[in-house]
Length: 378
Ligand code: COA
Image: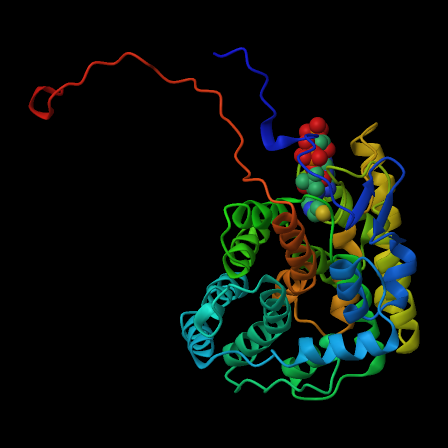
């Protein structure tokens, strides 16, 4: 064994600077583009948040209008990309596999040589791919995007073919803003690593989607919804949680590598979910979620004392997206639609002050073997 110090998983290693988001895991603080999350997430449209990340400033009214129409003009995808989505729907590929394959094909009509334009193309087209896949999988034809709707409203429109309710749009925008960026997480770092070789944004976002797909990164909100629906059906909150913990399973939506207190994103999303369900006149599902959260935190303290296992972002993601009409299978692709803002902003930042990302490994293999011809090997 070498005596070099090894930082497995790069945990706690600072590898660059960013002004996009700041995380304090002990205080439960998240700042995006200089704004506390709670302030930005509930007030901004997703277009305003994107502009903030790309320009380090909120847009004026005229700038927002220009930016929104520039973004909206790229929504239609090339025919070849639609062919990929159709093939994926026929093959019953998973939504994230489909998104990864179709995103790679977006360079069919773009050369990848204009990073600022490619950023907008990618952010603009991800919802079109996800919505087309969802409709084709259900045996329906895709709904063409509309340029007159906001990014969030157009995504909901392409899923159903109907103009969404403003409360659903606001709920989705709050979610998109909440998860748009989160430091050097695995998918963002993947994207930065790819562009650090002077590769292009299509390759970077395709790689980032591959990283986000893994259950250790973007896959928990679906199981949270399953848990809530199961508890809703049985009516036994405490019994379900005790049984899960006694069988040694993890409670989905609780615990976090960085946060030692309640995830600030859970705070923002629970408030947004409460407003959303109250506006719809039926808060029963939200109240059930609150009861599950309270009982889970108490029982985690009982079964896992001293670990401070608190609610993470995925818990209220499930509650809010379910309410806003996003199908469970699309929770992670919708996360990708949001995080594409952070990925592309980080890629632009990397390109602005690039240094090839190239860590070293500690070699633990042999060094003085002698070659054995094939016929002499045992
Ligand atoms: N339910 C029950 N126990 C949990 C738990 C949970 N949700 N999260 C962590 N633990 C326990 C582990 O069992 C372990 O206990 P032990 O020491 O008695 O074996 C201890 O806490 C430490 O777990 P570890 O996996 O080392 O912590 P981590 O920091 O790597 O885990 C997560 C972070 C998010 C992976 C983890 O909390 C988890 O799996 N949560 C559930 C899935 C989820 O909600 N993911 C979305 C994250 S945003």
